[in-house]
Image (cartoon, rainbow, N blue to C red; front, side, top):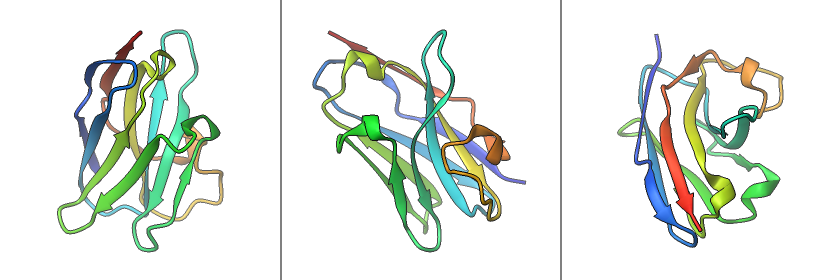
Length: 123
């Protein structure tokens, strides 16, 4: 049974940075960060694959975010720089416990979710 706990959210001004952490218990195949703003659908931000360390990003990230993993300590990070007000939302960590052919940004391809951490960016 995989368990995910997010941390590191907060309130920053536009242009600022935050680093989110997803602490993982259990074995995962891949981990992703999603976000959801009020009234919007949950959208994929970035993902990394545990064994290969391959990463993918949503187009809107535009080289501002970086996902990384510390396999020794079972933590996946999301470093967010040059934050914009439109980055505001609840950020969730999600994991796949095995290979799934679906696109990494599809929420229904993940079997475990954390409770989320709030990110608020003011202009």
